Amino acid sequence: MDPNKEFDPKTANFDELNHITNLDLRRRAALAEIDNAKFSFFHLKAVLVAGAGFFTDAYDIFAISIASTMLGYVYNNGGALTVNQDLGVKVATPIGTFVGQLLFGWLADMVGRKRMYGIELMIIIGGTFAQALCGDGPAVNVIGALIVWRFITGVGIGGDYPLSAIITSEFAATRIRGRMMAAVFAMQGFGNFAAAIVATVVVVAYKNQILADPPNQPDHVDYCWRLLIGLGCVPGVIALYFRLTIPETPRYTMDVERNVQQATTDVENFMATGTYEYNPDAIVQRAQAPKASRRDFIAYFSQWKNGKILLGTAYSWFALDIAFYGLGLNSSIVLSAIGFGSSTASTPQQKIYDNLYNVSVGNIILAVGGLIPGYWATFLVVDSWGRKPVQLMGFAMLTVIFVCMGFGYWAMQTTHAAKSAFVFLYCLANFFQNFGPNTTTFIMPGEVFPTRYRSTGHGISAASGKLGAIVSQVGFAWLRNIGGTNYWIGHILELFAFFMLTGLFSTMLIPETTNFTLEELSNENQEGFIRDVAPVVVQDGVVLQPAVTNGETKETV
Image (tube, rainbow, N blue to C red; front, side, top):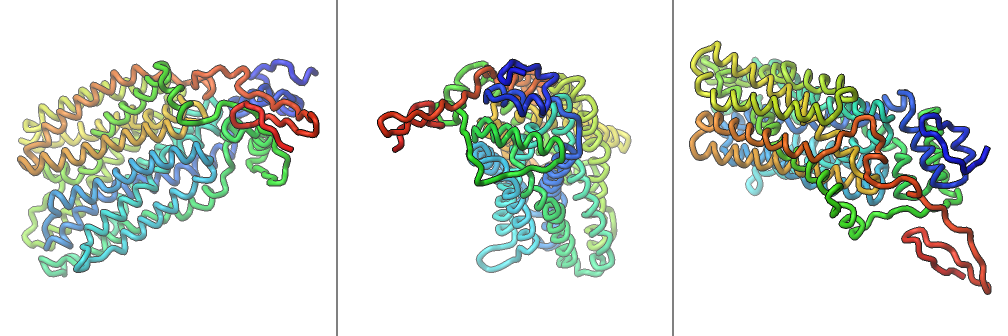
């Protein structure tokens, strides 16, 4: 067999891989092994390890929607947090997430996925545990301390987005890549559901103590919010070991580290046994390949065919998160506004218990009624329908739903049946957010960029989403200051409809990614992408050794 002959990616195998000496063909054969692989235990492990982080992320993000109600009772004499306090504890995490997505997205491309994976989870664990220990003092009150630690937790959560997305996509076979990434992201729904379950359990567990507390000093509600927040670090601790021991992706090893030999060895090991081996003393032959740099980044994304994709993924996520976090972080406010969170009990203590119980159970209903089914509906069809049709369908349905909710808001507050219709539409909105752009805006940025910028591109897109979340939270708080919560909810929902409509147009800028390899989606010619290092030449006692960074020759004695 000619070791440098062209190969058929559909039939490439380890035997061919081990006999190819041309590094460019060897790279393409190794990529074909990954793209055509059968689903294995290693793929399942990658999904579970990445998904555990997203479970933790969602728990930490959305638990504050319930915890903020508890904080108001404890630290505002049985009342509610002020608008600015509520805004602070809710917006701190999205701001930290924004920073973490940009920072870790860049770092994962610069120093490697493996080296960064696990660090973000350590930050989440530490920040979550610290929140549960926050206290009041003369210099810093508990709300201020919570805001600081929620920002730090958000940085870790932000790092999880690009890292989990690209590690999953770079290990996945082409035909199952969408389902693997959707399964990882679907853990967000279970995290939201778990936060509501824990809130319900702790509130019921402390029922007698809450009813016995002084009316203006519900001390045992303090136990409730600390347990609710603190238990969020448990799944992260469980997943940490597996994140620290996951192998580097072969695509990064080949295209960024330019170590084709190590990458092909990794492919064979993890595809066959689910393990990998690394010999630090092995002789490394660095191939020549396009190298990430500021100039190369500008050159790549200044081309409209590439720049429009980044614009499309970033704005689509921005538009989606305006509504997703506007609803998710204010679910208790919405539930109270439609009468689900309010109590008619005769004693203040009973009212506190009833309100906390109703808000907790209400969030369970919202999670089960819309969030979780939506994620798994996407999982079922994302590799058959395609990512782009799912996103377009989701944005279209959300536009219609928010128009109905916004313009019909006051009419749906008049009777019990009308309020039930509003709750149904609310659950339907949650469903089509997840059976639509909330899932696909996570998947596509992990597929459409070249390896050297895949994490950076995903980080920029995800950070745009968190910018939308920040805008939504600040806008929500600002409008509440002007006319009160109930007055502005209808208008806020109308604004959500507008942004869903704009998401339809930004989706048009993104190519369909289903059944295409990551290299086909990169808009770069893969033939000759990797060039072999020329043999060492000795001339007049001087060794002329080709440089591995920019293709120019350097001299060493």
